[in-house]
Amino acid sequence: MPPKRIKKYKNRYALVDGIPYTMPIFAQDSPALMAGFSCDWEKANALLPGNEVHALKLPNGKAVLLITVINYLKTSIGKYIEYSIAIGCTHGSKPAPKFLNAMMMKTYGTGQYILDLPVSSEVSVKGGKGIWGMPKHQANLDFKDEATTVSSQYEKDGQFAFRIEIEKPKNPSLKLKIGTTNYCRYRNMLMASYIYFQSKAGINLFSKAKGRLYIGDHPNVSYLKNLDINPDPFFTMYMPKASGILDDHFDCWFMTYDTPPEKMTEGFESVYELGLNEDWLEAPSVTDYQKYGI
Image (cartoon, rainbow, N blue to C red; front, side, top):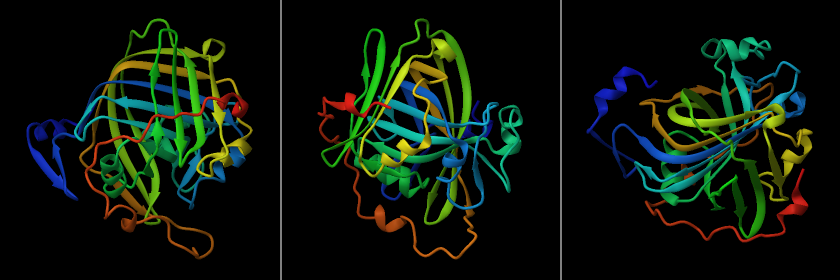
């Protein structure tokens, strides 16, 4: 559940970087899918920058590739799709022990490190990156919620990038109230933001979890092909009407390296000229994505 202090913000207003917010910053009644795929731990850990975050270890020693797509229908900044590609991670001076990283999530800062985060609208990029440091950028996205399946496709600059398909769990009746920590790098700082979701959900585990990934050649995602991803997800989840509240703060730490960094990552220059446009790019159009299946 969200901290009690957040309730005090109800019906108050904020203005940040020209973006007006009705507080608390929220999303309501938004369908979402999520899937987890095991992958090589060493290769996944090598994708995480600095010395402060480490790939989470499953009991079998593998890492976790997490795909989350939310079709935000009602939020503080309008409608948009958010497409998260992330590695499950922990935060600290060294990797957390297996099992304990799931049992003691606060102790080990368990969450996800976001590798790529395309969204539908410009204003979502401006707010998500400029305030919370999330690696948002505008792309061609869809979210198809059909009778037995849920899918979402991601294209960028006219090129196929990524697609996730899952078999819809039959009975989304499990009541979930969860908080998640999202880590990312911005201005060469490690950023952490917190969101609290509640929803009824359907979850399929292990052999019942049916889904498939398609990874294209776009440079935003092509490197994921080297992670030795198990093509069969170990869990899938569908939330027909998820609601969430962002925390009223984020955390930020200096990111350190074994040798002096040679260049800067994205900073304020990537967002300060953006406006408040809520328009979406055209829907994805690539139909021969089957050749990119893992």
